[in-house]
Image (cartoon, rainbow, N blue to C red; front, side, top):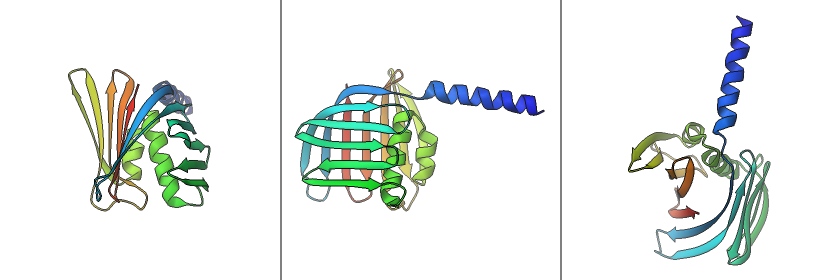
Length: 172
């Protein structure tokens, strides 16, 4: 029985490792502030190692960045700079986990973390993953996350925060 259990664990690990996504690509970001209607557009380069290293380096505006390095979240955006420990700042920890899980293809965990329902729709060669909160959104969580894939490649990610900010990332 132990042998079968070890085989199943190894198979699960293999499937999970195979499903991990990595990225090294350009992106455009549109940020919408729902209350004011103000939009901001940015351009940058995204790298993700499939685990806990994410880097978004902006070329427009130059010098801005958003990085996840293990438990640290490093931000230089919109005139604000911060280095935050995701284990100490729970709100940041939830956002960090959601981003990493969505990029890695761990949608079920992202839905669970955000008290959300997960749906998958496939149509015209595109797969859309929707993660929509059930009622109250956890502090720092997302009201909704929509991921669009062409084949195995994510081409769009929309993150709607409970406070009315919607970030749309078009991934090249």
